[in-house]
Length: 217
Image 1 (spheres, helix red, strand yellow):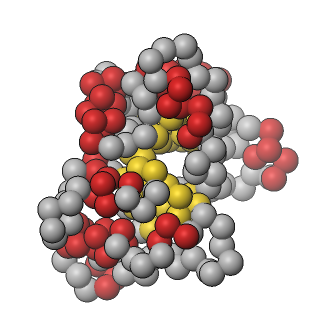
Image 2 (cartoon, helix red, strand yellow):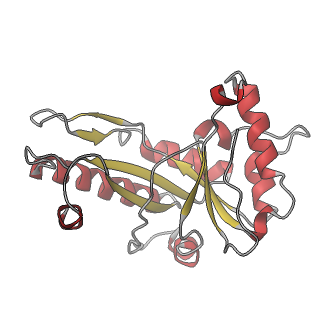
Image 3 (spheres, one colour):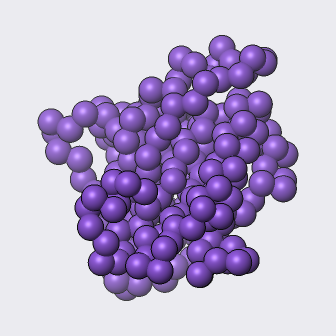
């Protein structure tokens, strides 16, 4: 296991525990409601994401829930962690895990001044009528899950929409619109339930397209 180790001169950033991919945070206007006063002061808490990928197989460690819990506990109890990390994006499994002494991971992080986030999308599925393009799922029960995550200590969320550039014309207008609409609905639902949304439209680097084409998309 080789987690990224921040240099002493690094500024505080956010760590993604168990996730991958580059996140592009888009600041969204908070709607009026009971959680608005909580959303605005926190929207700049986590400005970037570094990688923390648990490569168990490569280290000869069995990928079990207990080993994952122990590894994350090792990360979250690192002395001086809060000098370099201001927020962490967790999976649902991590959010509800506890340390050896029974302390919930969100409490462990909050005591260090680290804001807890949660990955709320349920992955991508094929988008009908396109050339292998996808749309992200997870909206159906999102409001209920956001309430549960907030109660557990999460204060921001992350949702990933994937766009692929191909010579055949991808991303199509259909794929762009479907993912934009999903991201917008996700962001609105999160804000209504007290979570600051990180909006991540990920344009994959795969392909032979130019830098100019990537910038255009």
